[in-house]
Image 1 (cartoon, one colour):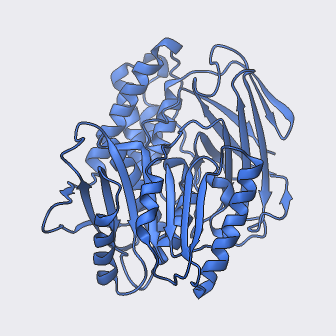
Image 2: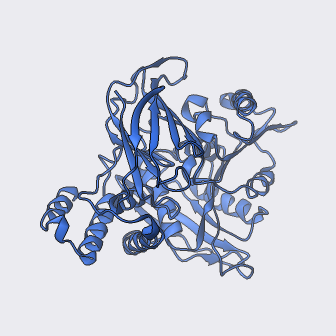
Length: 439
């Protein structure tokens, strides 16, 4: 599909292209991006040049987002939510890629209060066991939580043969949920949360690290993942709650929870104001704990989609890597593969708005994050707007303390298309981008 798009874009000279031509190209690009799977660990480029003026950014950003909403609404609609007071909750279904369909509940709490504004969304993952029982039990618990008004998306595991929430097929479902819910206009893009119990606790901890840039918070319960599966660094800008029973020694859940607390406490001490967390062992409890304390704590936190310091451990889940995080895009392969000794890359990016400088640290690392080596290949893009820099002035970029860019950043519609297609997020439609070779 991507090759068809490129041929289409090159059929008319860019200097001759009308707004109608451009809009048609953008729709084709978004459609190709939605169907991109096997090569989706790298940014799909938008061809051509379409420079714009700074004063026109808000208007064009809104137009690009509306084009995206139109494509997503027709290609991947969410569902019609049922009211939480309903007697019967319909089961919806999504077809997944190379997996059985995923059933789910989608409902609205306290609908009479604030229907005229976007509301929070909670993605709630159930535990392992007979899937019909776990699905129904999670619905009952979610109806009890004190977190309305809000939307709830409760999926059922597609099959008990592959009882994990982080496989590729499920990853595509979560990304569909993020883009479809935000494109609907009903969900607040800065108040999306993931939580889960037991197997859902493991899943929500992994997804929290993998998709932190979409989330305001994550709340695993009765879980406790090894930290190489959910790097703490990725939680820098969101809230994290982990509740486990003090007596829950199954699979080392209580000891793994304490390890997470130690790691979060350390990073929070070194980075005041960041790594906000509430990690507790509930005294005298085993695998069954008080689940009602998680979302009332999480709901007070709102995502900052434009953090001025980003930490990203780009790690594989089921062999798949993210192609972007916050405003970072992977533009060419970094040479990492799952099960390699150095199977992940690490990035720390600091934006100095006062001096219009960007500082990038980039490296390869091990699953334990205990060894590093230089990245020998690849390219990243840093999407930008007024939240990060002054677009009217030169920007200086340092990669591993070496100056690699010093110029004004071009402003172009194509960067809005790329960032919108990459993230599917109304807050992240960026008009500028700097590309950086890493080797």
